[in-house]
Image (tube, rainbow, N blue to C red; front, side, top):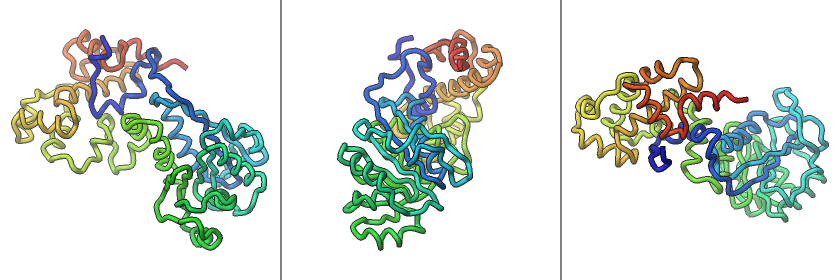
Length: 346
Protein backbone atom coordinates (compact mmCIF):
# COMPACT_ATOMS: atom_id res chain seq x y z
CA UNK A 1 0.00 0.00 0.00
CA UNK A 2 1.37 3.43 -0.84
CA UNK A 3 2.74 5.51 2.01
CA UNK A 4 0.30 8.28 1.18
CA UNK A 5 -2.46 6.03 2.49
CA UNK A 6 -0.93 5.91 5.97
CA UNK A 7 -3.01 6.82 9.00
CA UNK A 8 -2.19 9.98 10.95
CA UNK A 9 -3.73 10.58 14.36
CA UNK A 10 -2.65 11.04 17.99
CA UNK A 11 -2.03 7.29 18.14
CA UNK A 12 0.82 7.52 15.65
CA UNK A 13 3.18 8.23 18.58
CA UNK A 14 2.17 4.91 20.16
CA UNK A 15 3.34 3.02 17.09
CA UNK A 16 6.17 5.15 15.72
CA UNK A 17 8.93 2.77 16.84
CA UNK A 18 7.33 -0.06 14.87
CA UNK A 19 6.36 1.59 11.59
CA UNK A 20 8.43 0.37 8.63
CA UNK A 21 10.36 -1.96 10.93
CA UNK A 22 13.34 -3.33 9.04
CA UNK A 23 12.42 -1.46 5.87
CA UNK A 24 12.23 2.17 4.86
CA UNK A 25 13.77 3.59 8.04
CA UNK A 26 13.34 7.32 8.59
CA UNK A 27 16.21 9.34 7.17
CA UNK A 28 18.89 10.36 9.68
CA UNK A 29 19.68 14.00 8.99
CA UNK A 30 22.22 14.51 11.76
CA UNK A 31 24.21 12.96 14.58
CA UNK A 32 24.88 14.12 18.11
CA UNK A 33 27.64 12.87 20.36
CA UNK A 34 26.91 13.10 24.07
CA UNK A 35 29.37 12.18 26.81
CA UNK A 36 28.45 11.45 30.43
CA UNK A 37 31.02 11.83 33.20
CA UNK A 38 30.27 9.54 36.15
CA UNK A 39 31.70 10.24 39.60
CA UNK A 40 31.70 7.83 42.53
CA UNK A 41 28.30 7.96 44.26
CA UNK A 42 26.64 9.34 41.10
CA UNK A 43 22.84 9.02 40.95
CA UNK A 44 22.09 5.91 38.91
CA UNK A 45 18.48 6.99 38.42
CA UNK A 46 19.47 10.44 37.15
CA UNK A 47 21.95 8.92 34.73
CA UNK A 48 19.61 6.27 33.36
CA UNK A 49 16.73 8.75 33.05
CA UNK A 50 18.78 11.03 30.81
CA UNK A 51 20.30 8.10 28.91
CA UNK A 52 16.90 6.47 28.38
CA UNK A 53 15.67 9.52 26.47
CA UNK A 54 18.56 9.27 24.01
CA UNK A 55 18.21 5.51 23.52
CA UNK A 56 14.45 5.82 23.04
CA UNK A 57 14.90 8.67 20.57
CA UNK A 58 16.97 6.32 18.43
CA UNK A 59 14.34 3.58 18.76
CA UNK A 60 11.49 5.80 17.60
CA UNK A 61 13.53 6.92 14.58
CA UNK A 62 14.38 10.47 15.57
CA UNK A 63 15.81 12.48 12.68
CA UNK A 64 19.02 12.85 14.68
CA UNK A 65 20.95 9.81 15.87
CA UNK A 66 22.42 10.04 19.35
CA UNK A 67 25.79 8.46 20.12
CA UNK A 68 26.65 8.13 23.82
CA UNK A 69 30.02 7.78 25.51
CA UNK A 70 30.40 7.19 29.25
CA UNK A 71 33.61 8.05 31.10
CA UNK A 72 34.92 8.42 34.62
CA UNK A 73 37.68 10.72 35.82
CA UNK A 74 40.30 7.97 35.85
CA UNK A 75 38.76 5.44 33.45
CA UNK A 76 37.83 2.94 36.14
CA UNK A 77 34.33 1.65 36.80
CA UNK A 78 32.14 4.19 38.59
CA UNK A 79 30.30 3.24 41.78
CA UNK A 80 26.72 4.53 41.81
CA UNK A 81 24.75 5.73 44.80
CA UNK A 82 23.05 2.31 44.94
CA UNK A 83 26.33 0.41 45.23
CA UNK A 84 26.13 -0.80 41.62
CA UNK A 85 29.26 -0.42 39.55
CA UNK A 86 28.90 0.86 36.00
CA UNK A 87 31.44 0.12 33.29
CA UNK A 88 32.73 3.10 31.34
CA UNK A 89 34.15 3.56 27.86
CA UNK A 90 37.29 5.28 29.09
CA UNK A 91 38.76 8.15 31.07
CA UNK A 92 37.89 11.83 30.94
CA UNK A 93 41.17 12.46 29.14
CA UNK A 94 40.01 10.19 26.29
CA UNK A 95 37.25 12.63 25.31
CA UNK A 96 37.89 14.72 22.23
CA UNK A 97 35.83 17.78 23.02
CA UNK A 98 35.89 19.01 19.43
CA UNK A 99 33.81 15.96 18.42
CA UNK A 100 31.22 16.36 21.22
CA UNK A 101 27.89 18.14 21.15
CA UNK A 102 27.14 17.77 24.85
CA UNK A 103 29.16 17.01 27.98
CA UNK A 104 26.98 15.94 30.90
CA UNK A 105 28.21 15.63 34.52
CA UNK A 106 26.26 13.15 36.63
CA UNK A 107 26.20 14.06 40.31
CA UNK A 108 24.47 12.51 43.30
CA UNK A 109 23.40 13.02 46.90
CA UNK A 110 26.70 11.86 48.43
CA UNK A 111 28.99 13.29 45.79
CA UNK A 112 31.80 15.38 47.28
CA UNK A 113 31.89 18.94 45.95
CA UNK A 114 35.60 19.30 45.27
CA UNK A 115 37.84 20.48 42.48
CA UNK A 116 39.18 18.27 39.70
CA UNK A 117 41.77 20.28 37.74
CA UNK A 118 41.54 17.87 34.79
CA UNK A 119 37.76 18.28 34.71
CA UNK A 120 37.98 22.07 34.86
CA UNK A 121 40.37 22.05 31.92
CA UNK A 122 38.15 19.68 29.94
CA UNK A 123 35.02 21.75 30.62
CA UNK A 124 36.71 24.93 29.46
CA UNK A 125 37.97 23.21 26.32
CA UNK A 126 34.51 21.78 25.65
CA UNK A 127 32.90 25.18 26.12
CA UNK A 128 35.41 26.70 23.70
CA UNK A 129 34.53 23.95 21.20
CA UNK A 130 30.82 24.87 21.45
CA UNK A 131 29.55 21.96 23.56
CA UNK A 132 26.40 22.17 25.62
CA UNK A 133 27.47 21.64 29.25
CA UNK A 134 25.04 19.94 31.62
CA UNK A 135 24.78 18.83 35.22
CA UNK A 136 22.55 16.15 36.72
CA UNK A 137 21.50 16.53 40.37
CA UNK A 138 24.50 18.61 41.67
CA UNK A 139 26.78 18.06 38.70
CA UNK A 140 26.41 21.72 37.73
CA UNK A 141 28.72 22.55 40.65
CA UNK A 142 31.74 21.61 38.55
CA UNK A 143 30.59 23.82 35.67
CA UNK A 144 30.24 26.73 38.10
CA UNK A 145 33.63 25.95 39.66
CA UNK A 146 35.17 26.17 36.20
CA UNK A 147 33.75 29.72 35.88
CA UNK A 148 31.34 28.68 33.13
CA UNK A 149 27.95 29.30 34.80
CA UNK A 150 28.14 33.01 35.59
CA UNK A 151 25.18 34.76 34.01
CA UNK A 152 23.25 31.52 33.52
CA UNK A 153 20.25 30.08 35.33
CA UNK A 154 20.87 26.75 37.02
CA UNK A 155 18.73 24.02 38.60
CA UNK A 156 20.32 22.33 41.60
CA UNK A 157 19.35 19.86 44.31
CA UNK A 158 17.61 21.77 47.14
CA UNK A 159 20.18 20.65 49.71
CA UNK A 160 22.94 22.40 47.79
CA UNK A 161 21.26 25.62 46.72
CA UNK A 162 22.45 27.68 49.70
CA UNK A 163 26.03 26.54 49.08
CA UNK A 164 25.79 27.37 45.37
CA UNK A 165 24.42 30.86 46.09
CA UNK A 166 27.23 31.47 48.58
CA UNK A 167 30.08 30.20 46.43
CA UNK A 168 28.89 31.38 43.03
CA UNK A 169 26.98 34.68 43.34
CA UNK A 170 27.12 35.17 39.58
CA UNK A 171 24.94 32.10 39.01
CA UNK A 172 21.14 32.37 39.19
CA UNK A 173 19.92 29.41 41.23
CA UNK A 174 16.47 28.33 40.03
CA UNK A 175 13.66 26.65 41.94
CA UNK A 176 12.68 24.83 38.73
CA UNK A 177 13.36 21.09 38.59
CA UNK A 178 15.33 21.55 35.37
CA UNK A 179 16.64 24.41 33.30
CA UNK A 180 18.01 24.63 29.77
CA UNK A 181 19.59 28.07 29.39
CA UNK A 182 21.26 28.49 26.00
CA UNK A 183 24.27 26.12 26.09
CA UNK A 184 23.85 25.14 29.75
CA UNK A 185 21.49 22.49 31.12
CA UNK A 186 20.87 21.30 34.67
CA UNK A 187 18.37 19.34 36.73
CA UNK A 188 17.74 19.20 40.47
CA UNK A 189 17.54 15.46 41.03
CA UNK A 190 16.90 11.99 39.72
CA UNK A 191 13.30 12.40 38.60
CA UNK A 192 13.93 15.55 36.55
CA UNK A 193 16.81 14.24 34.42
CA UNK A 194 14.41 12.71 31.90
CA UNK A 195 12.51 15.97 31.42
CA UNK A 196 15.75 17.91 31.14
CA UNK A 197 17.04 15.66 28.37
CA UNK A 198 13.70 15.87 26.58
CA UNK A 199 14.04 19.67 26.66
CA UNK A 200 17.52 19.39 25.15
CA UNK A 201 16.55 17.14 22.26
CA UNK A 202 13.57 19.33 21.39
CA UNK A 203 16.18 21.35 19.54
CA UNK A 204 16.65 18.41 17.17
CA UNK A 205 13.26 16.68 17.09
CA UNK A 206 9.78 17.74 16.06
CA UNK A 207 6.73 17.50 18.30
CA UNK A 208 5.69 14.12 16.86
CA UNK A 209 9.05 12.57 17.72
CA UNK A 210 8.99 13.99 21.27
CA UNK A 211 5.44 12.65 21.70
CA UNK A 212 6.62 9.19 20.65
CA UNK A 213 9.45 9.29 23.20
CA UNK A 214 7.09 10.42 25.94
CA UNK A 215 4.65 7.67 24.99
CA UNK A 216 7.32 5.10 25.81
CA UNK A 217 8.87 6.73 28.88
CA UNK A 218 6.06 8.73 30.49
CA UNK A 219 3.05 6.44 30.07
CA UNK A 220 2.97 5.63 33.81
CA UNK A 221 3.15 9.16 35.22
CA UNK A 222 -0.62 9.32 35.59
CA UNK A 223 -2.37 7.15 38.22
CA UNK A 224 -3.77 4.96 35.42
CA UNK A 225 -1.79 3.86 32.38
CA UNK A 226 -4.01 2.67 29.55
CA UNK A 227 -2.63 -0.02 27.31
CA UNK A 228 -3.51 1.23 23.85
CA UNK A 229 -4.62 4.82 24.07
CA UNK A 230 -2.14 7.70 23.83
CA UNK A 231 -0.92 9.76 26.80
CA UNK A 232 -1.48 12.97 24.83
CA UNK A 233 -5.17 12.03 24.88
CA UNK A 234 -5.41 10.18 28.21
CA UNK A 235 -3.94 13.09 30.18
CA UNK A 236 -5.68 15.93 28.35
CA UNK A 237 -8.07 17.40 30.90
CA UNK A 238 -9.46 19.87 28.37
CA UNK A 239 -11.22 17.29 26.20
CA UNK A 240 -15.02 17.62 26.21
CA UNK A 241 -16.81 15.00 28.36
CA UNK A 242 -18.70 13.58 25.38
CA UNK A 243 -15.43 13.02 23.51
CA UNK A 244 -13.85 11.38 26.55
CA UNK A 245 -16.86 9.09 26.82
CA UNK A 246 -16.63 8.16 23.14
CA UNK A 247 -12.93 7.35 23.54
CA UNK A 248 -13.69 5.19 26.55
CA UNK A 249 -16.38 3.30 24.62
CA UNK A 250 -13.92 2.68 21.80
CA UNK A 251 -11.33 1.43 24.25
CA UNK A 252 -13.77 -1.07 25.75
CA UNK A 253 -15.16 -2.27 22.42
CA UNK A 254 -12.16 -3.39 20.40
CA UNK A 255 -13.36 -6.85 19.38
CA UNK A 256 -16.83 -5.64 18.33
CA UNK A 257 -16.44 -2.05 17.11
CA UNK A 258 -19.45 0.19 17.53
CA UNK A 259 -20.68 2.11 14.46
CA UNK A 260 -19.89 5.81 14.67
CA UNK A 261 -23.59 6.68 14.75
CA UNK A 262 -24.12 4.36 17.71
CA UNK A 263 -21.11 5.86 19.51
CA UNK A 264 -22.58 9.32 19.05
CA UNK A 265 -25.97 8.23 20.36
CA UNK A 266 -24.38 6.59 23.41
CA UNK A 267 -22.63 9.82 24.41
CA UNK A 268 -25.64 12.04 23.65
CA UNK A 269 -24.46 13.91 20.55
CA UNK A 270 -25.21 13.68 16.86
CA UNK A 271 -22.85 11.88 14.50
CA UNK A 272 -21.91 15.21 12.94
CA UNK A 273 -21.15 16.70 16.35
CA UNK A 274 -18.94 13.74 17.25
CA UNK A 275 -17.03 14.03 13.98
CA UNK A 276 -16.56 17.74 14.65
CA UNK A 277 -15.21 17.01 18.14
CA UNK A 278 -12.69 14.51 16.80
CA UNK A 279 -11.61 16.89 14.06
CA UNK A 280 -11.21 19.89 16.36
CA UNK A 281 -9.58 18.12 19.31
CA UNK A 282 -7.73 15.15 17.81
CA UNK A 283 -7.29 16.22 14.17
CA UNK A 284 -8.80 13.00 12.84
CA UNK A 285 -12.15 11.30 12.30
CA UNK A 286 -13.84 8.88 14.75
CA UNK A 287 -13.62 6.04 12.24
CA UNK A 288 -9.92 6.53 11.59
CA UNK A 289 -9.04 6.90 15.27
CA UNK A 290 -11.05 3.79 16.12
CA UNK A 291 -9.35 1.82 13.36
CA UNK A 292 -5.89 2.84 14.52
CA UNK A 293 -6.81 2.00 18.11
CA UNK A 294 -7.72 -1.52 17.01
CA UNK A 295 -4.58 -1.82 14.89
CA UNK A 296 -2.47 -0.78 17.87
CA UNK A 297 -4.00 -3.63 19.89
CA UNK A 298 -3.39 -5.94 16.91
CA UNK A 299 0.25 -4.86 16.76
CA UNK A 300 0.69 -5.71 20.43
CA UNK A 301 -0.84 -9.16 19.94
CA UNK A 302 1.19 -9.88 16.80
CA UNK A 303 4.38 -8.76 18.50
CA UNK A 304 3.95 -10.19 21.98
CA UNK A 305 1.87 -13.36 21.60
CA UNK A 306 1.86 -16.52 19.50
CA UNK A 307 -1.84 -16.28 18.60
CA UNK A 308 -2.52 -16.98 14.94
CA UNK A 309 -3.36 -14.03 12.73
CA UNK A 310 -6.95 -15.09 12.14
CA UNK A 311 -7.62 -15.06 15.89
CA UNK A 312 -5.96 -11.66 16.22
CA UNK A 313 -8.08 -10.29 13.40
CA UNK A 314 -11.26 -11.43 15.18
CA UNK A 315 -10.02 -10.13 18.56
CA UNK A 316 -9.52 -6.67 17.07
CA UNK A 317 -12.82 -6.43 15.22
CA UNK A 318 -11.90 -7.32 11.64
CA UNK A 319 -14.44 -9.39 9.74
CA UNK A 320 -11.90 -10.88 7.36
CA UNK A 321 -8.21 -11.73 7.48
CA UNK A 322 -7.65 -9.98 4.14
CA UNK A 323 -9.10 -6.71 5.45
CA UNK A 324 -6.96 -7.03 8.57
CA UNK A 325 -3.79 -7.60 6.54
CA UNK A 326 -4.55 -4.66 4.27
CA UNK A 327 -5.18 -2.22 7.12
CA UNK A 328 -2.19 -3.48 9.10
CA UNK A 329 0.05 -3.00 6.07
CA UNK A 330 -1.20 0.56 5.57
CA UNK A 331 -0.07 1.55 9.06
CA UNK A 332 3.07 -0.50 9.58
CA UNK A 333 4.37 -0.83 6.05
CA UNK A 334 4.40 -4.62 6.05
CA UNK A 335 2.11 -7.59 6.55
CA UNK A 336 1.40 -8.79 10.11
CA UNK A 337 3.27 -12.05 9.45
CA UNK A 338 6.36 -10.22 8.25
CA UNK A 339 6.06 -7.77 11.13
CA UNK A 340 6.07 -10.67 13.61
CA UNK A 341 9.26 -12.09 12.11
CA UNK A 342 10.97 -8.70 12.04
CA UNK A 343 10.04 -7.89 15.64
CA UNK A 344 11.55 -11.13 16.92
CA UNK A 345 14.94 -10.79 15.31
CA UNK A 346 17.81 -10.53 17.77
